[in-house]
Every structure is written in structure tokens, then in C-alpha cells.
Length: 278
Image (tube, rainbow, N blue to C red):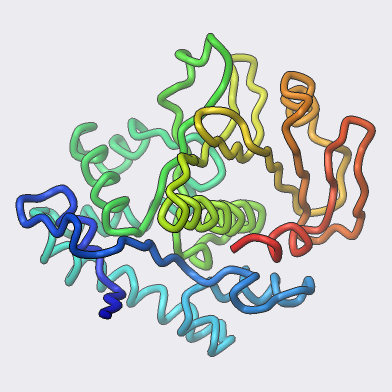
């Protein structure tokens, strides 16, 4: 048996003429999660948030090494993986795009704003974002909502696999949770063959919940992220009222409260929720 790791090329071959169909079992490997580092306490989650889930910076536990590794990671993506797998001539602008994305985490991504900032065509920026997805540098989530969702269906959110490059704490925490949930989704797809998807909730009235896990097209559970103990988010209450049988969680990075509300919403510290995932 052969285990091949550390390459996006297998993903490219799935879409190309050099098919490996039936000759390998496809498993997507993502950064380390709290469960994988056997983390059970707030301090374990804090280290993961600070140093990222990539093995080298996480094992070194050094701010200097984390910054160095993150910078080299972006350089390798552009100068090695991108050159080998995609035809992009303006590598300088491509690297500038990568540098803009950490500030975009946590809000709907505006391709038009990026286009204006970088002075590029809308089509070019959209294509480059797709390339970054296929290189496993970023991933995007689409909204799920009611029948009027057409008004916001294009408002995707963008997250990074290297969350340590995000300066703003709340956005970095939300990104960490997104990667944990995505890894859980990928495990269910790749190992169990289940039809699952990670989305977020947003409607035309501006209500938004950070994450919605769907299975077979129906909500499986909801997750809202907060930095500290807060009242339950009104949008999460609204979503639970519309879907009373769907489990819901409001998790906080620095909070200590752990209880279940009258609506059935579980409020708990983030490490309590995340340690039970993959």
C-alpha cells in the first residue's frame, strides 16, 4: 500500500485527462485540529489559534517561526505549486491578491473590491480565487437561506488554511472554526461517502449565522462563533425557530459559560465543542 501526501496534483488529475480513477483512495488532509493534538483545554486551543494548524509552526510554538513559515508558505505556493500546475503570468499581482485575503475573512467577499484594488479584470480575480482553492490555499462558503436567497446567493465568504496570517482576532477564530468544520465535512465525505456540505446562513434582512452544516441538502446543525460570553445571537435564535429540530451551538473563544438555552441552543466554550470533532 502507498500513501501519497503533500500534493495538490492528485486533485488536478481528477479533472484532467491523466485520470487515476479507481487507482487510489482520495483523502483530503487539512491542518491539525484540536482533536488531533489531543487538546482539551483553553490553552491548547489558544496555541492552535496563535501558531496555526500546520505541523512545523505549531510544533515550534514561536511567533518568529510562525511568521517566517507563513511567508515562505505563500512564496512556495506562487513560485512552485502555481508554476507547476497553472498558467499565471502576472505572479506579482497574484501574490498581492494573496496578501489582501486575510483582511477579507469574516465578511462576504467582494470580488469587485479586489478587482478595483488590484486594478485587474473581474474575470481574472475570479479565476485566481478558483486557482487558490484548487491549490488548497483558501476555501469559500456559499450562503443558504430562504426562497429570497437569490439576492445574496453570490455573497460567498473566503477562509484561509493558514489562519495564523489573519491579524484580527475574531476573524482568525472564525477561520479556525471554519477549518475544523471543513475537516469534519471532508472526513464524512471521503471516509463514509456521505453527502455533506458546509455553508453559512444569510438572508435579505441581513440576518447571518456563521456556519450551517447540511446533509443531503437539509440542515444538520448550526454554529455561531463569539470571542466571549454573550447573549445568544438573534440570528441564531431566528434560525432555530425556523428549524426547531436542528441542533445549534454558540461557541466562544474566551467564554466559560456552558449551558443549554430554553430554545435548545448549546452555549459552550469553543474548546469543548471543537475537541469532539475530527
